[in-house]
Image: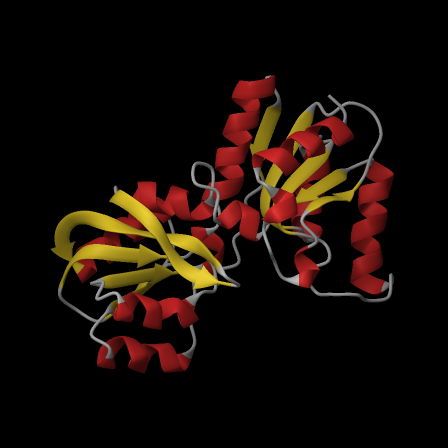
Length: 249
């Protein structure tokens, strides 16, 4: 399988063409290479560290959530040049999927996070750009602190819990989606889980009587790339490896 064949399959699998996203996401094949794909590196972010890991692990291609154009149009010099030149020298291809990976019903970041907390009766939730990109559902009744500790254990990341009380109904959107908190409050959900937030979201959570759990932008978005990797291993017998480079954010 070459990079064009694999990219075409991923385009259809993730419905890349029909899902709206930020302009700098540039979903799909971002950097081409030559030859067959023997090993795929999976990463949340395309950065110098994950590129070096991919080269070290002898990957021919990377599948990432945040691609090389995430910071927008810029001159090809400095750190940006270093990344591109390293990829060209190593014949390392790149495919990126942002919102399409977040919202995939089976392989998406949100589905992975929902499965991690054993959430059931899943329904679409979290409107962004006219699409519901997250999920809502029910979990076994437990305290907000217990849910936070469960997430800390299963994500192996620091988790901040804002608010107290019993939690049974949950909405979640992975990454940096604290602005959707008000939607959880409007739907009378007990808790909203996302990756990171701003200072004002603390007060909004307390005053809106909805527990807010911030489980890390990076940590909550590791599930999707891993799920796609497992799918490709089963479908094409393709070797994959997760390139872990946590930011702590």
